[in-house]
Length: 342
Image (cartoon, rainbow, N blue to C red):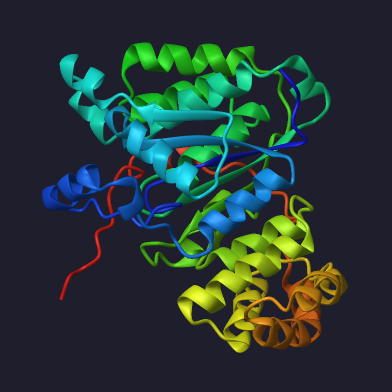
């Protein structure tokens, strides 16, 4: 097994896919959709393809039931996505074992899956310092679980603290044992580089400050692309490809593209770096190919030099804070925030 330069872990529902599951009718519709009927969030497929093309190993970890595997895999193949692993929730198994809490629980599902994958990785993954970027959304508990995962692997959360979190989260006893066993087998290191949370439910970004600066709430995938570009996980051309999709398919203009950068920068999530590389990519990639939306790309890139210094001044990515009180946060992490329907 080769050792990747970087790992990306992606959720699917409401992160990659535009999925509705607030009602039973929504669930049935989602389960019956063909692969070609499933819709991706704007820019998500482009960014995921670009990360794969840049040598990032993609691992899918979704709360969708195992019974949807074929259609979900077909959808990803239609989108040109390749992956290293694809983990889905064993809902039927949980039902047969009368584990009804597990049907909605994310802590007892995603945390052991993440820890097991990390513990089972080749030893060189740790010795070479391979890091991870995790993608989720604000519909469930992704920020909580991903931040906890990072702090467990780094050793900032002790086994005793982890056991208390599992108890507060009503994780089944045997699953808690697995979590503690996997956590104990991992070589402690700073593995989580970034947690990117798609604000599908329009949660206030400040709700996520409790998890520290590595957790980045974002409104659109161009914002996510700016972050992973600054982290040197994709080239400048990848950012422009995501921007092209937003213009051509979703009616963004150059000003809106630049505002996406400015808004994320004001919240302290961008270093204000590598702007010249984006401008250079206009000349070396976009203009020679006369790509669609070239004029809007030029407007965006022209505005970024004014926004970059403001982003640098606001950047809080180097903040070092103590881990949040996960045992307290777990008491509310499974609460679903449903949008009010008018």
